[in-house]
Structures are given as structure tokens and as C-alpha cells.
Length: 235
Ligand code: UDP
Image (cartoon, rainbow, N blue to C red; front, side, top):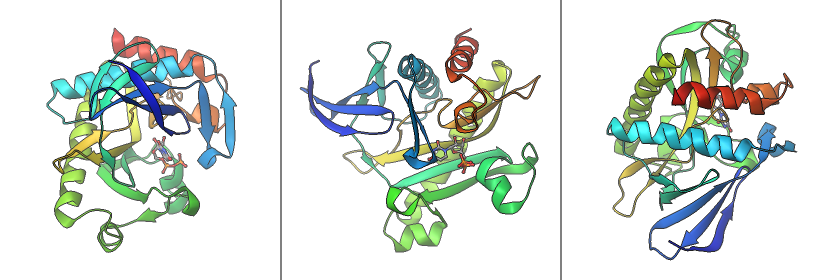
């Protein structure tokens, strides 16, 4: 497989075409960002950690029969994925109150929710990714009613699988964000990454943050923390 021209450069990843139709080459970068890119730093080793963590997770999700874009990890910082047309939604699943949910509803961080909830944010940097509902998704022609149901069901399956996976690593899955895309036949696939950049993970015993809140809230160095997450998942 040969890496071809750069297709897209995101905040923490570069996407390249390959010599194979429908296959993309992803390179994870040593970059941390928060607040929609307003806070940005080079963090040596982060790309390799996130690629290894997300590859391990997508492999496990594949074992659970969850359809995704992931093909394989090809180096410490690189992976191959299927081309999908990304649906411009940040799909957030919450098991426990934290972050924007706690702020918006004045519910203290750490409060367990009676059941997992799925939220949609319109992925549009210009608008700061606003919180939207199913009707907005339909009226903006982001997805159809059937697709919305499919995306929610997929998000809940991912949540069930991730909770089990993290529980074995003595990690509490507070919330996470996924992205989904359409393959060439219009089928919905899980896409993007699942890593401590996109999940809130708390140590089950100490309740310490094992995720990007370390960086967002200036709580210390995120590399040893991400290393710990990888180690626990791999054990
Ligand atoms: N999240 C993400 N990317 C974003 C926004 C949120 O990966 O652009 C993840 C975040 O890491 C957390 C979950 O989605 O696990 C819920 O985030 P929240 O809405 O609470 O926003 P925040 O407090 O991070 O601004």
C-alpha cells in the first residue's frame, strides 16, 4: 500500500489517499487542542499513544460486530481506514454527568444518570458545534429519521462495549464522543477515533481523570496518563 496525496489535515490527524480506491492512510499527530482549537500545544508521543489506543479499541469493537471504518494499524502512529463520507455530527453518549452537561443543567460532575443518553452537536467550527436535537438534524438534512435511529442504536452499542472494556481496566466511562459516516453504499459506519481525547475516563478507585481533561483543565502532563490507559487496556 502506498501513501498518496494529503486529503485533509485535522487538529490531531492527517488523512492521505492511498493507491487503493476507498482506503485512506491516517497519521496521528503529536498535537493537543482544546476549546475548538483556541488552546493548542505540541505534545511529544501523543500521536503514537492515541493511534495505539484507538486501534486497540476499534479492533475490540470489530470483535463485537460493530461496523466501523477501521482496517488496521500499520505503525505506531499510522492506521488504514475505509473512506466514509462523515456526517457532520458529534454524537455524545453520557453515563455520568460531567463537562457541558453539568454546566448546562447544574448537575454536579460525577452524578450517575438513570440511563445512558445520546446527544447531537452540529459539527461546524464556525458555530462552535451547537447542541441540536433530532428535528434540527432532519431539517438541516444532516441525516434522515431512519439514520438518526440507526446512529443512536450504534452509539448505545458502542457504549455497552466500551463500558465492559474499560471496566476490565478499572476505568469508569463517564462520557464520550463518536463520529459516524456513510460508506459508498450509504451504510452507517463508526468512524474517526475513540481515545482519551474523545472520552472522559475516571480511575475507578481514585476518580482521577485519565483523559484530555488533564490538558483542558491544566491538571498536568497527559502523556503518562494516556500511557497508563494504553497499558491497562492492553493487559
Ligand atoms: N468531546 C470531543 N470533542 C469535542 C467535544 C466533546 O471528543 O469537540 C467529548 C469530550 O471529550 C467528552 C464528551 O465528548 O468525553 C462530552 O463533552 P462535553 O459536551 O461535556 O464538552 P466539554 O465539557 O468537553 O466542552
